Image (cartoon, rainbow, N blue to C red; front, side, top):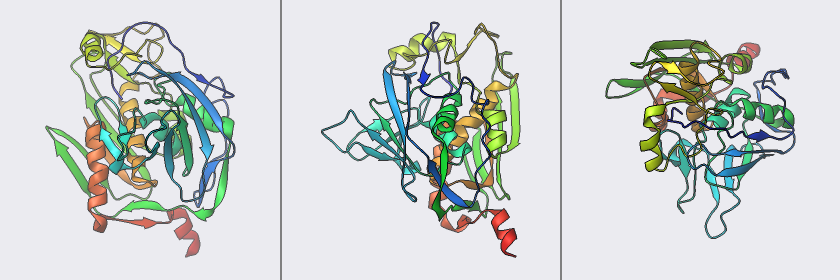
Length: 324
């Protein structure tokens, strides 16, 4: 999610979590079985757009349940929303899902990326407000929370979406595509006029280790000159220098600077990981994004669903090799 942001200070809390997402490198679980959390874990923080503090409890869920959000503050309508591509109802500066009763949850992409990167298939997300907390602008706090909860394998096989033919969507010079590959690969390119960003690209094979080391800590970003207009539109009300990389002219004004020279494009790749996990299963395919954002990522996910001949459910390649 790239957003405008204001100066200030507001920190989120991941209760029971570690001080950084990388102090506890848990051994990745087998890619053959579905995975849920071992126990519930609570997070709390401010929404970057609403400015509202919300509490989020991540709970274990049965095999085959997938990721489901439950608005605990909603009593007069259906409070449940399945985290699926077809549930996406808005994509301006974040991914918003909703149900038929008009209940929504916004800015879900970083949490979804953490579930994907750590291989969590089934989880219930209880939230007492309309927006997932931004935390520090990355998905590090969500990785910490999953580590604190622990993970357990379930007695059900994991299914992967294996891309068999190229699937491409384009719009106004931007593109997002999926191509066949033996694993999950992520390639992204961005270009901005400011020299604070310029042209950046990243190309990674995504597994749990590379997700933790290469993407999880990369933060969202925005431009100081856009803040006023965004706030008039009801956005960026919770944006601060603690949760957003802020660019003014050709400078990043955050006191601590960047975590990586190419943190901007890595965050866009992080967003894409979360947006694509709304397909409901991990991918075996190569994503290529050129100036893509949440809207085009969702268009790509919907294109996948509309082309059943271009993909299939499959076991991981390592399991297929063992069976030969």
